[in-house]
Image (cartoon, rainbow, N blue to C red; front, side, top):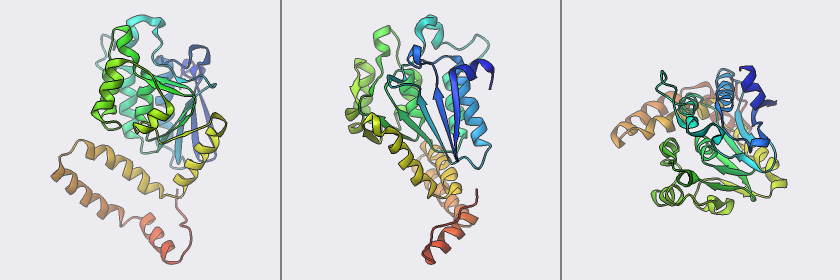
Length: 261
């Protein structure tokens, strides 16, 4: 990771989990190129390390998970470079698809605009009850185009339209009702809730989780016949794995599996 990215993104290894902290509290953890590069570099490193069981993405402080793009750069923050056909956020999203590791969003505060985009890239999300969510881009004359790609698999069409077209913010409880997040807890209980979710992931087969996450993404783009054929091939492969043999043996012996990582 480049020095500039290190200044804006802090990594913390806790046992078999890598925590990724957006460290721009004075700017409400707003996105810039350094933040996106830092998160992407952490993803790449974790994907290459079989001992990493999960990633936690969060922001420093209690006011903001991520308040979106840093608008101090004007409209240039939304543009790709003239010689680059993809955006910084788009490149990060592509890297997420290649990382077969569960990503947990620890939403410690405002989660809006590009921050909502980061949330939509995560597999699971737990939020403090003080957090606020929204896509207010229409209020500054733009639209959450890139985030739309991922919202389709997270939210219903009516809820997407409500957030995108009005630009209004919603509470954490409302976000849970819309299935945007998995759980809402008091801020003081946020870390314990995240650790509880991590402990559940540790009980799962690392191989099954990685293959399963890739399968979820792959099937999103398939019609029913192709998805079913793909699933049939995948279950045949997974059932012959070392983890499957250990899991079934442990089940029959009434003990916890000893996964190989």
